[in-house]
Structures are given as C-alpha cells and as structure tokens.
Image (cartoon, rainbow, N blue to C red; front, side, top):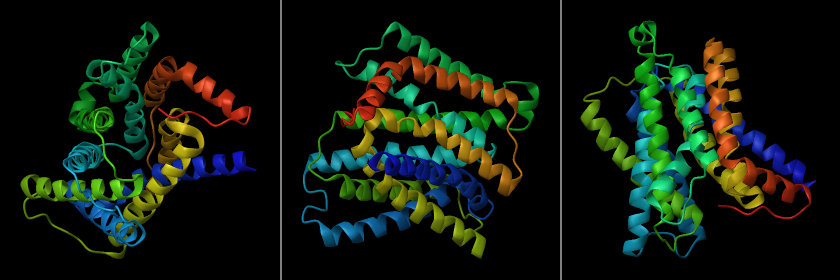
Length: 308
C-alpha cells in the first residue's frame, strides 16, 4: 500500500513539474521571463513563510551559517536557475526545455568531483558526463537553421539553468544550517525572489505587463501548485525513497512537459531531440546506475532507501 502511494506521489509530482513548463510558456505571453520567475516566488515565499512562522519556533535564519546557506541557495537554486530557465523557454518547446534540464543529475556529480575532496568520479562516470554533454549538443542541433531560429540561444540559457542548480546543490553540501527543510526552503525562495526582482530591474527595464485571467492563472499554478505543493511533495518523496531514486524525476518530467505542450500549445518534439535525451539518460545510467539498482533492490525488499 505504501509503495503504491509513493509511486502515485512520484507520478503526480512529475506531472505537476512537467506541466509547469507548459504553464510557464503560457505566462511568458504576458510577463517577461525574469519578472515572471520573481512573481512566482514572491507568492510562494510569502505563503510558506506565513505557514512556518506559525508552526515553527526556529523559523528564520539566526546565525551567519543560516544566512550563508539561504543566500547561496537562493542565488543559485532559485534566482540563477529560474532566470536562465524562463529566459530559455522563450525559444524552446516545453519538452525540449525539460529534456535539457535532465542534464542536472549528470552535472551534479561532475561539480562534486571538482569541488568536494571526498567525491570521486569513476571511468564510467566520466563517460556518463561526456554522453550527457553529447546529448545536449544533439538536442541543440547546432545547424544554420537553429541559429536563425534562436534555438541555440534557448539551449544555452537552459543549460545555464542546469549549471546553476547543479553548482548550487554541490556548494550547499559544504554549508551548514540549523533551519529545518521547510523554513529553509521558504527563505531560499524569498532570497531568490528578491534577487530575481533585482535582475529584472536591470535586464527588463519598464516591462510591459498584461494582467489577464490567463496570466493570473499561470502565476497561481506556478506559485501554489508547482512551488509550494511541488516542493512539499518532493520533501515527502525524499524521505520515502531517497535522493537517488528522486533523481529519476528529471527523466519522467519531460514526458509530461512534452505531452502537455502538445495538447495545450500544439508543440512538437523532433526525433533528434529524443535521441539527445536518450544520450542524457544513458549518461545518468552510467553515473548512478549501480546506486540506483541497490536503492531499488532495498525498496523492493521493504527496507528504506538511503539518501545522498
């Protein structure tokens, strides 16, 4: 029974985060990308902070270590990631953008190997990283036509989003905080929102904003469902199956992103993009295949999975 509930939660979260790519494309018709990301996390941060302030005694950063954590995480996991991601989605279909972010679990071990002394990258891991990069190049399809359609710019921006979140994930491993996950996430969202507003003021001066029911619906979905609901579900999933299996979300999300983009926006994905995504998936398998099999074996035997 618990296993069925976990699978249902996994698929529901993949569906929510996958359809968020399509909803972002809808929102980009009314708001510039960085401002859209900022407004998304304004609302999400306020809601989460209101909740943790009434349910936690230790709900705000109190030490220098707490502030270092939320600033680094807010800058890289929220501001950098979503500024680049939303900017890149202007030029890409929902499915292709989601496929490129599938590179995150491939980039993270690479940064860990470079920046953390206790991390090692095996020969198969090196091949996995190379395959991940190769897959991104295949998805980008660096042709003259791609240059003319700004496709390469979109791929580069979404690649930057993947780099930002992978780097942030590694750097925050070296930082300590006494904040629980929920208040920590709330403050990370708030710091990210402030930085996104600052970036928007610089790169999107006097933006033209169109407030319509469709725009409001897109922001509410991204803030309430994808951010607040999505991150709460993700924390539950982390506790139940661990970080290794949770990484598989990055390879199920593109299915929902592609399907929703096709159904709602009429988007299509080329066979070349699917080949590139398969290479990224293969690269992840070489990097995390053995730990993933061990974790799945433990889950199948009824023991809890270890998170990393």
